[in-house]
Length: 332
Image 1 (spheres, rainbow, N blue to C red):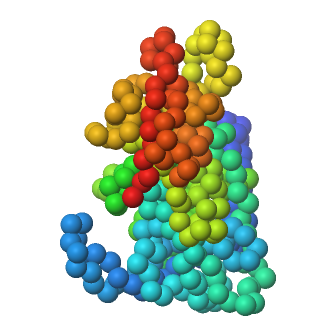
Image 2: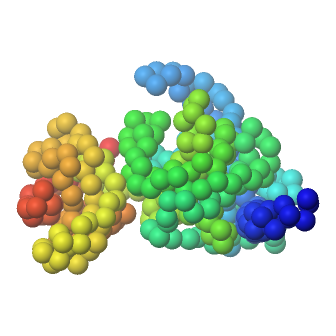
């Protein structure tokens, strides 16, 4: 009887072994670069409170440069007076906050040790623009202080919007069912090759399997500004949007030269976008004379120097191509 069952089970066993091999390979590759952040600082006592109290917390982060820069979440290190990094083998390193960007819930800290551990190698950054729903996703972090915990799942959805603790929306967020818990914040979300495709940031409580990561392409843009200036200076339109594909007929008929655009999901009342006449459901295909194939393109174009100056906004509204004049403002 066992010989009759074996052939039908063999492909399943091989598939499980292949999946296990992928996860263990990613864990071996990425885990040495992941650190636990123990933070001492101050935090507000409530959302609307001006009072602050001393507090401690912990989270995750990962080394992304050879000289000890670590990427994590803004909410992990905000208000920090002292930051300590703990490596996979238990070594503790003092660190300092380089800069943070609450708008994307990202922050950069740097290990202060003059002689960094040799095995604290930087991760390999991937490209989140090529992600597909259903592909393997592996998360590494330190939930509840349990160092270097590995969970695996899939990319559940793309182009989500997520509201941060300061009430602002982060666009183009990656949704995954790889289990995340408090303490995972700031850790890497990786693809099957061990390349980082996102920065784990949140889960929905008490839902199971609904977790989110900031797309690594967004993070790559942000960390450059944080390292050089300690903050990201940007203009804003007041739009919550997501990247969506354009119909091929629309692309050909209007000669757009791009195959995706920014779908306007909502507009802040009284914002520059509202004053310009932008509407929910519009598709932004260009800004300031440049094509916008997605949220990342729009973020890169919304530089501080454009604030206060009229810019052309190209949108697809139904089958029409509409041009609007918008005056971005500086995000305070």
